[in-house]
Length: 83
Image (cartoon, rainbow, N blue to C red; front, side, top):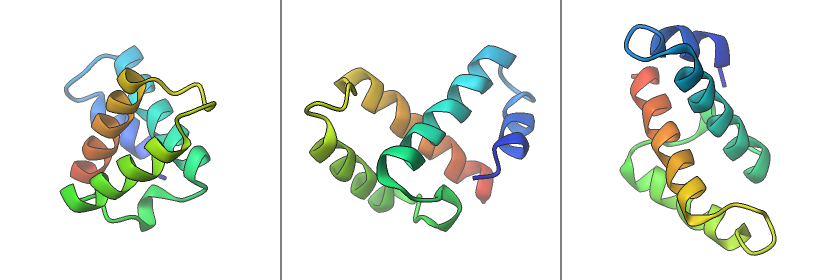
């Protein structure tokens, strides 16, 4: 993931702490699933696949339904950034 580029893109419309949260959530997805978001399909079907994969890992992972939703929102934003 191009974290700095993504953050700079986000800073055009949101604050610094919020942008950092988006980057952090995207990195959490990458770490949990051992993938690079730059090589993922981030269309809605692709994000659904990421959701399903993360849900399988939720028990014992410390990821709550709310944090899962936050991560998926960040992934969608990253998909918009890549377009």
